Length: 422
Image (tube, rainbow, N blue to C red; front, top):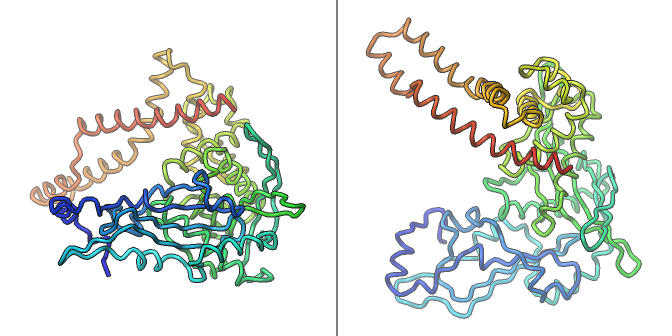
């Protein structure tokens, strides 16, 4: 079996040189994903979407060699996530000494058993979709308005798999759902759901079809409750995904706000953290936390104008009332302070810039203190080795801080514009 992670780009170049470049496929283009609500969706190209990435299945190059007109069809029923998997191609490489990649094995290692390979059986399974019911307890129901229609959305929470009336059904549903991480979340990993410290949140659309309610899955998140000394919990958001057809509609904000509101009700929760957030998630989290902190007096425009820096009162209020940790609260402070800063006023901008840079400079300052300590304790030869390892100079650090501040300002301004439009 081909190990896709060991595929060398040089082999692909050799294939091209041998006139076999027509057998090289972009994995992201040949994988067709669907969330099927009715039988007609199966043949409707508009319901098809492609992965954002495929390296977690088909290697870093995200290419598949050995086939022409290759199609990998991975369809899910939009409620219960019953899965259809199909492969097709017009021809396979037949040159002596050249072997086509194994397209099935890497995928079957990650797709849970129970999938269908007959499309007619998959169509028939859609008739049972109205028997699916969301797992857990409903936390929220709300109307979501788009340009064309209004939909009823619901958010459910599963706090203990063992407490469910049918845990096996939930485990199978979750196994199928988390396979979407492979295509849309970098460095994704599957979790062991039997650990009681996991909590699950699911976002559904509640539709009525032929007079019967059907719940279509739109997104989900998983939370792991870590221990925080001495008697608290620190929930960590581990996985968070809005399925591709429903992204960029504000649904991630709704789900994250509901998760935060739920966790804030627990007196044992110290603060909420996030595991390896993506850039898109950081942007959404910043916006959600800024909106929440706006309700606190210490983050009001008047208080921000009077405050010269991030204060202990801000840290306390953010953590005590909103379960926002110190690091994130400081970031929120900087964004909200930017909303009160006149960028055309050189004095105001200079004060804001210095405030942010002092925070950005903290790791460098720590390294500098470490170097000063080494100068007192180490021999000259040892000191030179340490200095080479640290590789820090004031000139380089100033340039680094300037670039980091510019990048940060670009991110902050995006959030400020979104806050102004809220």
